[in-house]
Length: 632
Image (tube, rainbow, N blue to C red; front, side, top):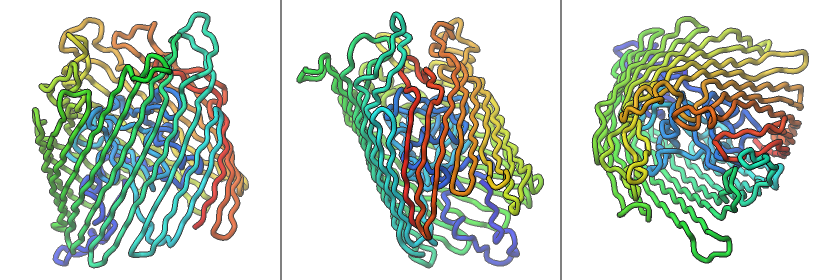
């Protein structure tokens, strides 16, 4: 993100350094991150996105690899820069929401419309952001608009396979107090048909026991109390019920069900002084997962009844001081209390985690240098001292260069340590280091003509040691199993230009990723050099939108390369490459402060049969209509 507080640069060194409030309210992890490439997506940019989950939007608007375990409502995992799903951290207003039990964040449980913006941070360091950032960081951001007195938004969607959804949001307040609220309700039978290539004769099957219902509510309150005092609070509840269908190739019926219920709340206090700022924040998150199964649908008792209830109390304090117009220093500490109650562990689990960290920024004309250190302490083996060093160079008015180098780690999850049978309390943290280099080029920009053309080219490398993997011993048990090397490039081109009375906008992205096993600690033959499972070497996406007055039409295309599903790279189990095309159109009309619109979308236009995860059926061609009303 580009941020150059000019007030800091222009004031003589002998005078007080007055810092704009917008900079003061940033956390240290954001303020000291100009060396990291950030992609921002706002929910006002895409009219069809407010009712969608975060996974669906990232699959459209970013180079991130999003993997869905089947139809809408199913688990959606995330991979950034060729790493695992527990190597990408997801935070909500500065607090990590990855599950303490699995280390993952299920993107199907994150409504995109609940956020004002989403930032994808490549090269996020362990020194700035803590555990699990080998691939990067997704920041979910709620923020006030102090100039907006009232805003209202409502939309409803109907789609194939008995799918429907509703979204409602309200923003109100003034320049001192703001209140935001949003509600969402989505459901579907998911009764699509698919070709089951794992059954004899590849019959066409209609999906059964595949429905889901999801509801959520979020509220945020912002108070600018004056004299540099700022308060922020939020509460977010999300609930989902999902029928788990039988895998492809199965001749039996499934009776499995999964319930997810999350509640998150936080409170932040910020105080800005003439040359410094203070941030104190606290949060409490609970995650409840209930998985059941029956041998027969008429059975009164479950054959499997698994309950997982985790709670996390998170507290942090950060201080930042602008020593001069050149140097800014920061420091902070955090404390996390985790508790897990489940029938899958031998006992209730309580763990405490501590961290202390420091930051330094040096600003020299067109150069910005950031460095950070962090030490974490938790039960088990503490990770080594984390460090990062990065630069941002403004080469010209149209070219910016960013580079960073940092150490990283991932602490073992609760499941990896305490699951019965097989949990391993002696696991060491995964560890490694990596670097990113990016060039951001503004090729063409003309406000008068409405023309814009820009490109971002990124190269990256990650080395990960002690990669934790479940293997078969007396039972499935996690061990520090392998060393992995990840290297690759990403290129993104954004464009906007006039075409007669219309405008054409969009983006093109391409990623090439080599994520390979360099060593296994049991010295298994035939694995060295193989690509990690479910990580394609090539991914490409394209978005194109044509707007003429109130009418818009567009398309989205994606190409995902072949993926290994077993580590020995057996071609028999390899999933083939696939391409998808979506079409969409819309009509919007404004009446004073009211904007009404109707939007149409066809997903998987060519009715492609494909699998994101082996043996999980995906829907074919899908039709969708959305009506929306906005008041500002």
